[in-house]
Length: 258
Ligand code: ADP
Ligand code: MG
Image (cartoon, protein in one colour):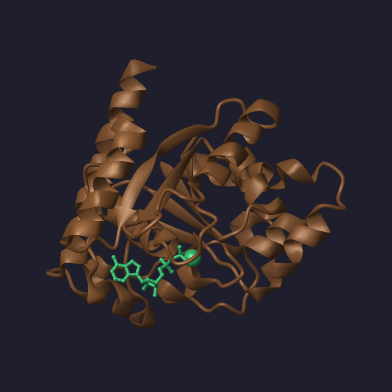
């Protein structure tokens, strides 16, 4: 069964989608079978990998109108990468799911139906802690939190950490924190201060790899490609490949220690 990693942070614009796309692509390029589930109605991970955002996907699966295997798409560019697409329809999911019986486990049922086919399943969450995100955290093995290097980066994280705690105690006792990834780093005093604060606060849960601010990372989605295929020589490509290697190394260690 594949490991399920949710990318979450209720703050918008911190690099969740950029990290979801490029970490998923990098892990797939390193030889693992990867499914990326787009769970944001903005569908930026879907379009960022070159897929149409007007087709059945996560929403239809959550509602039970489609089976995941019917709507999962295979990347044309990366042999070991698949995507469960999103669309604007997903905005209705929070309201509709909350009236459905047993709805807390919808995402888990979807994932269980396909997880044998993958080594890793990444989920790009929307910037909310609503019903859909709670559903995802109920289904996830761990949460990877992108943290933008900016003033007050730690602020707001306490809310996410409380939500994780609540879900651990009520819905998913085995939910882990995968780690914190610093994003959009620029070499200056403020950014360095944020890096130190996050490392001080979260210790070994902070990834050594830091994602630098890199214009090419902002351009790649409009070409429907992960950074490694859009511009393999960009810093962003190097950063995300290193992040993927660190992620896989940490997970090998965890497996051994289990
Ligand atoms: P989120 O999913 O958390 O809302 P995104 O990944 O969509 O955040 O990033 C927000 C914006 O910042 C996007 O326009 C994205 O292209 C850009 N961006 C993200 N990471 C970087 C980076 N390391 N360097 C430059 N631009 C970035
Ligand atoms: Mg996003």
